[in-house]
Length: 115
Image 1 (tube, rainbow, N blue to C red):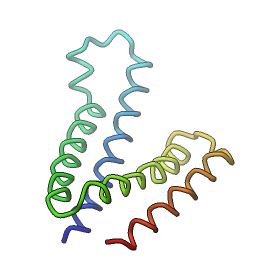
Image 2: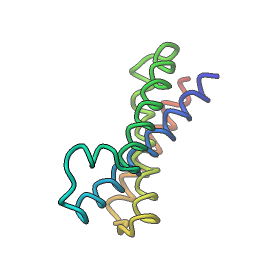
Image 3: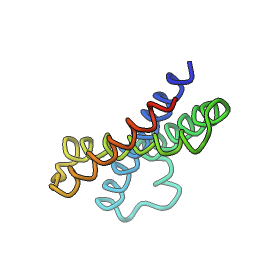
């Protein structure tokens, strides 16, 4: 069950980052929006919603796992968001980023074995 909560937290965190990026792009396109109008945009509301879901499920994970193991596993967000950025925002993936992802994967595998 805790693995499911962890996956929910991970996915919600990535969804929040996706919608925050969408919000940032929207705000750049529409600089005339007031602070309240920005908060009430669909991307911003979805970003806040998924951030809330992520925080709630993360608390449930921390109630069952040591933070010293759980927190480093969140680095999977970096891997997921690298591909999200590439496929949804047309950002380039560099060799340095690929090497970094491979190191993260190695670290996650190492920590995962300890669970």
